[in-house]
Amino acid sequence: MNIRHAVLLGIGLAVASPANATGPGVTGAHSVLANRIVGTWAGQVLLGPCTPDATYAPPLTYMNVLHSGGTVTETNTMPQTGIPNLHGIPGLHTRGPAFGTWSYNHNTGKYRIKMRFYWFVDGVYNGYQSADREALLSSDGKMVAGPVRAYRHLPNGDVIRSFCGQESARRF
Image (cartoon, rainbow, N blue to C red):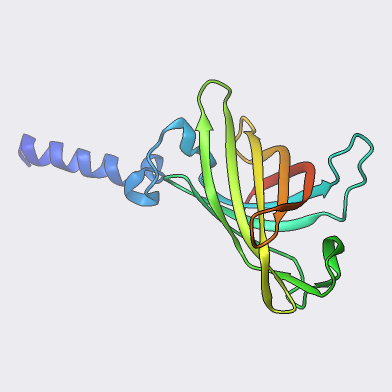
């Protein structure tokens, strides 16, 4: 084996090694600090009125996928059959999946996640809900947590309810 073949073989083994199994060629995510949050997360959010003595509703369980490049997709455990008379609006409420964006602030080390999903009442579009989260990733990259602000909007964009709460998720 000549020196050229030995160098090419060494490069090939280095590229194929398990230590490099998380690079952009495998996951599509560049190994920058912001991308530490990229992945699938199983979590819970507790929401209630934005008052000091707020009582939270039962936790909502969800799965989020934070994609490299800054987009988010979400599914949740809201009953597909709906919830009657939610937020003071008569009728059977259902919702669609959520979509959004995420960004990273290098100065604070925190992530900002903005999401939106559509509400339907008795099968008819009834507005949307937006959520804005500030998340801090644990040092081992397996947990994320932070405060949440959410708003339910009518179809014309008017806010009819605002919510505050906390969220935590574990890497799936």
